Length: 54
Image 1 (cartoon, one colour):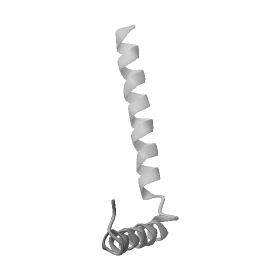
Image 2 (tube, helix red, strand yellow):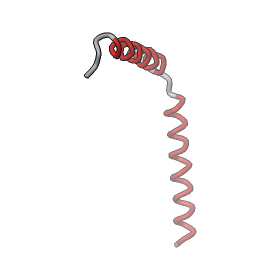
Image 3 (cartoon, helix red, strand yellow):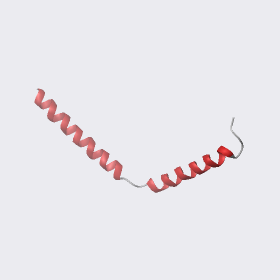
Image 4 (cartoon, helix red, strand yellow):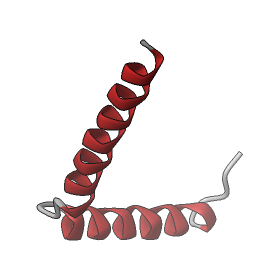
């Protein structure tokens, strides 16, 4: 059972922090670009290894 006010303020503060972080992260494609580069590298490595095994 939650006490009134005690956990609520902390929860509201946490939600506000998460919303602020989400607003800052919208439009940032750096992680997406890096993930795509990793994916391409992994596919190339997979193809190289499978060619060696043939």
